[in-house]
Image 1 (cartoon, one colour):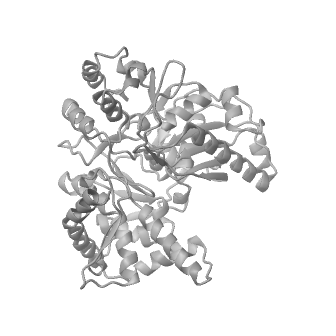
Image 2 (cartoon, one colour):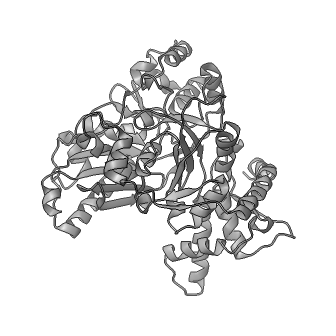
Image 3 (cartoon, one colour):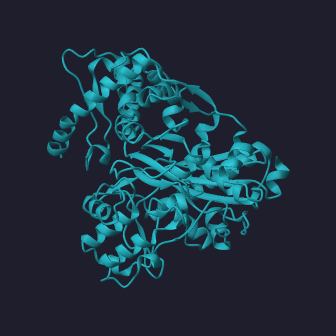
Length: 526
């Protein structure tokens, strides 16, 4: 392995998640050989969820240096050259720059639910779902607000696009990431020109045209530039890394999740469950109706995907586990976080199928699926509810999938979308079988989890970078993943349990009725 790394053949993927930046280096067999990570948190500043450019760059450097140290500690190998690099990040949001490359307003992340008017107007204008998170909704809302900076925009991109730009000089995006900025024309795999013209009519007062400020769209396998000398110095503060590594199109966490779970083929899907949760199904054809709950995005190679994205998943559950850690510490008991999580998850399996009448909402932030612009995490019960630790743990796992269940039912039940296989990945699935079983019960379909699921999007973007340099002529992305990466490995599959499916359905009816309680909390707890 030392020779492989030092000969510059290893491929690097780095993904910026909501709470962690992760770097994964892969070897000849496409498996991870070294990794590093950097924890970070968004900040709420003047009502806007954001990360500063300084935090972005410092996190990138720390994550890379830890990966390089891991490679040295394991193999005695110094990284001076890379076979290819890929960058990905949480999708959507708003990053706009002036002619000198200066950020015009602080980065507005996907988590901000502040573009309701823009979302509604653009959905009507295009007859196409434009969620509040999408970059174009943020731009149009800034226009509606009369924000001074809009006239000075020369370039708009996403977090993944920004990182790729400062390291390569190229203003490009992978089609999956681009599909969360502005609608894609599936026939051309580029931004939809009819909709761009419609938008330009709305933006006639500004000195720019939309097509001039958006990045160029590329599909998986295309070359997206190379690491510049300036980029190499920025990435590797030790100065050992040399420029020149080819870079694949930057992608979003949705696209890398599809790659990491072998879910880019029609009738396959995946659920990514961490700070936020989204479920994606690769569609055979367009949906019959426009649904505000379902985003239409694409795979990294440009196939249409129905996506249900929810802002909240495990943040409240994590807060409760931390609370129990403090409780244990107050007795002088030290318990590792993995042990705490496993105990919490396994205890939930002893609870009643409907959580004993308990109700919880995990809304740290707004949740558009259920119509909330802000969130208030809460736990509710009646005097008759069966209040036990097992039921409490179970309701916190159920509610992590509550909003997702509401959206997926529209696609799988109302629209009759066919699904052969769905794969779970992310923090919810780290404890064996528990989150997987609850997901199978929630969607009433088998769920697979692979051993590599924990590697997540950083591994997924490394695979997309490797596909660019190692694909055979005319080899499609799904052929590359099926034959060269997964080789038929479908992971462990768990099907739904009838009594627990019924229990989840009882819970979800309680969840829907209880939304009035959440509304009262948002309106009255300031």
